[in-house]
Image (cartoon, rainbow, N blue to C red; front, top):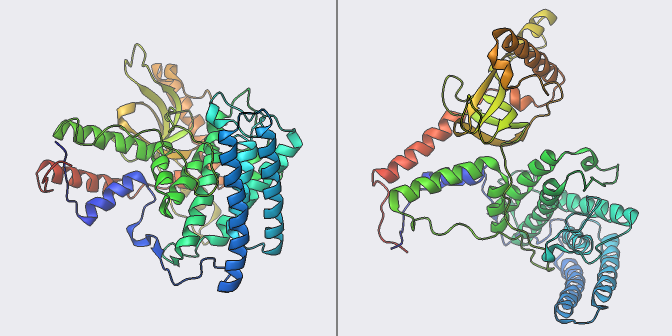
Length: 453
């Protein structure tokens, strides 16, 4: 037996909020067929000419992939590499003539990913997965570095050219698809880089790029952001993959799925999602399974959901997945802010500004069940080793640790970094009250369950 559920628009908005924490129903995508298909090529005749040239290049790449799939000889990969390089050169010429044509840049980045793989930001670009082997498995370091920098620049430019000035601004469907593809591509590269960045795979990015100094957490955070936006602009696969990357949506989805199964039986929500792939509409590409990483890591920012500090933001200092003797359950040692800095103005004296900029921290051992992880992370340079499980054995040790945490947090606040961490969470209880009311409607049969299927 299967179920058909009629949900109100408000209930649908709450569920969408769990999939994408940045979702706002008032800024949904608006498509307008009457708009130019590219906002920077308004003349229809010019656009058709440019698009036809691009289409011919893409069709040549599709023919290459078809030949490669059927080829049996050892020279097939070499022919494919030559064909891709010829296509990239043709795209170079097209972009030089029309530098504000975003679709050509997006396709050039796709071709670069096919040549060098999604791990082109790392020193080693191959993996054990057969489907993830790039056409050039062992490129020269300088060649790969330059190609990766150009691909990121292409995606960055495409996104900048097509992103509307306001979220509610209408877009042409073609422009929305190209923007979604560029965001999804960059999210895929960031996601794989964040997952595979480790000691034997060092970061190898052109030093002119901001990504050269990023950590694995930063790559995963950027991937979550790009995939969520890719889904918002129309790519459903990116939206589904963003759930597996975004720990908040991941946790909420698991909670609701388990609750629905307990209420209506194992068949209500259907089987677990299959492996999600990033689909590129023009050029065949590598696919990857959904992210199965542990998301309660050192440096992850979370929100306490129960107890005295409910609604407070904390940063995880030491996760203990399997528990220990005093706490035989999964838990984390966290540091948070009990009293946030107060608002200051220029008219206040320096002494008053310093007083209102102080924080009152707390440290605590929190059960994993009482933590809601967010997509954000916080660097812990000043907190490493300051709080451990032994800190809580003596009052003096605990007070010394709180002083260290207080100093580190105040220094970070004064430097202007991570200001969102020092802002009270005002929407926390509204979100969970909405979630409770929606779940209450299901339990109370206020939502009509008509038939399964």
